[in-house]
Structures are given as structure tokens and as C-alpha cells.
Length: 433
Image (cartoon, rainbow, N blue to C red; front, side, top):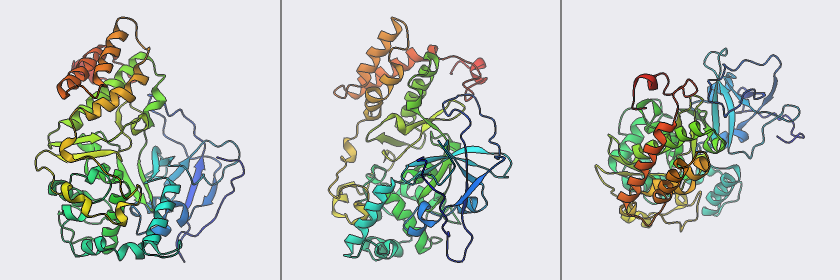
């Protein structure tokens, strides 16, 4: 934070209570694999009021939702930032913020507050919405979006069908099946009564929030419909307030590039396993990445690796197939242009190879994690397997075989000790670890 930032006060809503957020200094290393002690309530707290603009509540219902706003009101979510000087309002340009979360105001656990997109991109998107209606930049975003042809179709819809999401830019919706969209509606956490595939219980507000989220960044939707509690490699979705979502905290993979060999081997082994589960799973969905970087993967404090950012994750339903991709280009509108150029095109669904995620990870992420960590000839074997796995010109079976060979090399290089809490002490008694 810049030293000159001052505390700011803003009313959350007219006539309503102000939103109090507390700031405490960060007291433990986010890179540690050891389970941190519960966060303690600071003896001296500097408070400030953070209002509608900071959270994006002034732009609702063109936002994610409001399901976790009460946690802010009750001071059960507090920013956790290490500041250079006095405490003040966090800078509003960051994409995410570390924070502490409590259910009883006594015990605290780390969480992450994330924007759908960066603040600058949100401002550009809002201006695009106003421009689409030939309105001033200060127009009512919600009013413009409500008048669009797409949203009018949503208002009449009883069920979320592929034609309602045609032309949306996310790879998540490039190849939608009815089964996938039913899962979205049934598990959408920002409505009071989830569980039905029909949208009878959705208000107009709920439909706009869901449409806006899917158009801008479906990451929070992916967390909701493929939860970690069911074995999917995703952090837990805790709720949303305005244009922020709250999820369990992870440390980005790039913070572990300098990790010791046994930890690097463990993380690389896990990443290959995650990609394998995305390619082949009981629900018969094929997940693929359009691009990867180390910031898209995160590590929990128990050492387990998860997908930290699902915004570049596409889904193909191998059971039902896709129903709308061939006509997607005919359905572009303002919702297609909020975060990318309106002419942006994604590859056809049937052109996504099984090897895609492995090629990207082996070529761009794993080499930096595993380079120069091991003695000869193990390092040479790792490097050779990485080279074959990361070569896009190779046929799918060759890449899959190289990834399998790499897992075989890495497996015995991992250690079984309490630092890897996600698999300890199970690893002492089960050789699958």
C-alpha cells in the first residue's frame, strides 16, 4: 500500500449501516506448508468504512451477488495486508486481497477476496455498456443490460438452455450442453432456493447477476458447480458481495518455484494428477485450459494443489456433446464484448485435443518448478519427459505417455512427513501416495 493512502468513509446504502472492514498485519508466511495458528483478533484495530464503490455494490445487479455481505457488516471478514506504514484503505486496483474470515468472531481462517476482472477492465466494460446504448459514461449499467434482447429472453425463460448463452466469450460456455447448464442453475449459490433445474425461483435480479457473471468471468460459477467437497480440485466458494467473491485461501504456485526437491516433486505430481482428473472423471466432463500460468494454480496450507483461477477453463460434455457452438457466432451482443474484443473467437469444440492441458503445463509451468532440482541421471530423465510432454506436435498418446512417465519418476521423489498434511499420515499406510 502507498503510505499516503487515507481512510475513506462511505455509506454502504442510503439510510443503512456502514460497512466496517478491519485491517491487520500479515503475521505468517503464505508459502509455509505447516498449518498456521488461528488468526487472532488484533489488540489495536484501525477501522475504516468501505462503501459501495469499493465492493462494486453500486453497480448491482450487474455484479456477482450479495450472499456474503452480512459477513462484512458483522466484521467477520477483515482484510489482512502487511502495510509499510500506517493502516488505511487497501488500494482499489489489486485483483485480489488476502483476508481473515470468522464464523464466531473468535477463531479466524485465511480467505481470499477476488474481483471478477481488474478494476480498470471493469471500468472499460461499464463504458462499453453505456456506449452500446449511446448513453453517457455515467449511465445506469443495470438499466441498459435489462433492455437488451438477450436479457429479455432470459426473463421469459423457465430453464437455462444453450441458446441463451450462445456468443458469450468464456471457454466455459463455448460448448454448452443442457446437462451442464442444468447443473449451473441447480447449484447456483446466490439464490435462496437452489436444487431445481428450472428458474422459477429466480427473480429478475438473480437472472441478471447470473448472466453478468457468466459473461464476465464464470470462475465463481465453476467453484459452485464443481466443489472441492465432492473431490473437484477447486477452492471453496464462500459467497459474493458486489463484484467480489470470497473463497478459501491458496498461495500461488509461482511462490514455490524455489521449493526444495521433495516439495517440488510433490507439487508437480499433484498438478499432473489434477490435469488427469480434468481429462477423465466420473461425470464424463472433459475440462481443458485455453492457456496456463503458475498463478492459475494454488496451494492450500496443507500442501494440496488446487485450481486457483478457473477463468481459462473450458468444459466439454463427453456424455451429451455440445449443442450450440456452431451457431455461437450469430449471437454476439454487448454481453459478448465485456472483457474481450467482440471479434474474439474460440476454437471449435471438436478441435480440442486431450493433450492440450498437459502440453501447456509441461511447456510453461512445470519446467520452472522442476529445473535443476535433482541429481543426475534423475534430472535428465525429468527434463526428457517434460520435453516430450510439452511438444504440441506430438500425437495425444505420446504426450499422455510422457506425462505418465513423468509421474512415475516423480512419485518416489516425494517424502511422507507431516509437512504434507493433505496426505499424512495416510501415506505411511497406503502405497498409492
